[in-house]
Image (cartoon, rainbow over all chains, first blue to last red; front, side, top):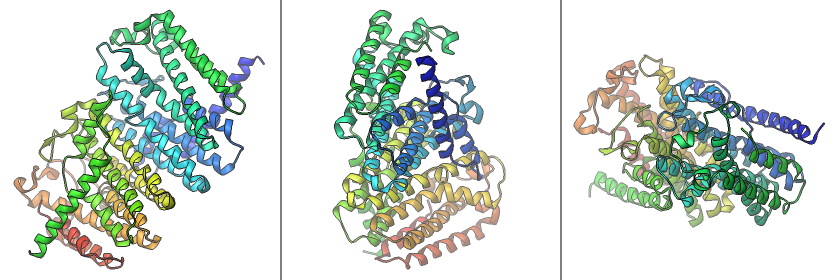
Length: 304
Length: 304
C-alpha cells in the first residue's frame, strides 16, 4: 500500500471509532420529548471528517501513557466538542442566519424538524455537550484538576471569546469590506478557536504541561487559519462539482477574504507558510507525529 | 413595620444583592464582538424577581456554616442559573417560537438587536453560564466534588431531561388537547426543573447530604407546580392591568391547563395542597426557614 493509501485507511478506521463514541454518548430516544433526541442524532450523525474529536484524541496520544479511566474522560470531551460544533451548524443554517436548506447533501435540521425544533435542537446539543463533558468527573475523579481545566477551555473557546464571538463579528460585518485585522479576528474566533480547544483539551487530558498546551494552541491556530484561507482560495479556484457547494459565493456576498485582500497567489503562499509553521512546531511536542502531520497536510492542501 | 412590609423590605435588599452579583459576572463590553456583550446585558439585566438565584442562595444558607470561598462558588452558580433562565426567555421570544415583541414592558432582545443576534445572544448566555459556573473550581478547589455535582445538576435540569425537554413537548403539543400526564410532564420540566436545580445546587454547595438534597428537590417541585397552576388560574381570573399581559391567552391558544382539566375551584385547591406540602417539607431541613416560607407563599398566592 502507498503511504497515502495507508494514511487514508488509518483515517477511515479512526473516523469509525469516533462515530462509535458519538453514538454512545447520544441520549436514548425516549419520553414525550423524544423528537428532540431524534433531531440531535439527525444533526450529529450527519457524517463528516470528525476533525475536532480526531485532533483532540491524536494530541492526547502524544502525551498520555495510556489509562482506561483517562480515556473515558477523553471520549466524553470528544463527544462534547462535536456536539458544540454541530449545534453551531444547526443554528447557522436557520432562516434568520444563513438560511441553508441543505448541508452535505442532506436537508438541514430545521427543514426536517421545523424551525422551532431547529432552535431547540441547537440549544439541546449545546447544553448536552456540557452535560456530557461533566461526566468526565465521574469517570476519572483523580484527574479532576485536568478535567476542570479542560472544561474551562471547552467553554471559553466556544463562547463569546471564541466561536460565538467570531460568528457575531461575521454576521455584523457581512455585506461590506472589512480590514485585515477584523478578518483575522473572524477567522481566529470562528474557525480556529474550536480547533485550538480540541488540541488543547487533548493535551491537558493527556497530562501535558502548560508550555506544551500553549504550543498545541499555536499549532492549532496556524492549522485553523490555513484551513480557512484555503477555503477562500477554493471558493475562487474550485468547481461546484468537487466542492459540492456553489463557488464564487464570497464574491456574490461581497465578502472580504484573503483572496480579495492579497490575490490567489499570495493567499496560497500564506497557507503554505502557516502550514509549514504548524508542522515545524509539532516537532517540539513529544510522541509520534506522523499521522497528525499527514492530517494537517490533508486539511490544508485539500481540493474540496 | 408589619410582618409583610418587613418581608418585602428584606426581599428588596436580597434582590439588589443578586443584581450586583449578576453585574459582576457579566462580560466586559469590548472587542469587535462587543454587540453580543451588550445583548447579553440587555436581556440579563431586565429586572424581575430573581427567583432562581434567590432560592439557590436561601437554600444554601440553610446548610452552610459560612465560608468566603464557598460563597464565591455559590455566586458563580447563581449568575449561571439566571443566565440559563434568561437565554431560555430570549429564544422563547423569537419569531419562530412565541414571537413576542415585548417582555416586562421592554422590547425583546431580537427586536432590539435583530433576529440573528437574538439567536446568538441566547447561545452566548447559555455557553457563558457554563463558563461562569466553571469558575467555581478556581474559587473553591477544595470543594471540587460538590462543585462537580452542582455542575451536573445545573446541566441536567436545564437540558433535554429538564427545561428544554419541557419546551419541546410544549411546542409539539400546542394547539390540541393533552392528557394530564403530558401536562404534568410539561409543568415539571418546563417550569419546575430550574426551580429544583436552584434549590438542589444551593443545598449541595452548602454541604447538604444526599437525603436533604432530595428533599430540596421535592420542595422545589411542589413550589414549581403550584406556581405554574396559579399561572393557569390567573390567566382566567386575573386582569390585564394586574398581570401586565393579556389574559385568557390559554383559551385563545386552545391550551390544556389545570383550569380546563379541573375548573378554577379545584385548581385552587391543588395549589393549596402543593404549597402546604412544600412548607411542611421545608421543616425537615435544618436552619432558619421563615424567609423561604414567606417567599413560597408570596409566589404561590400572587395576583400577578
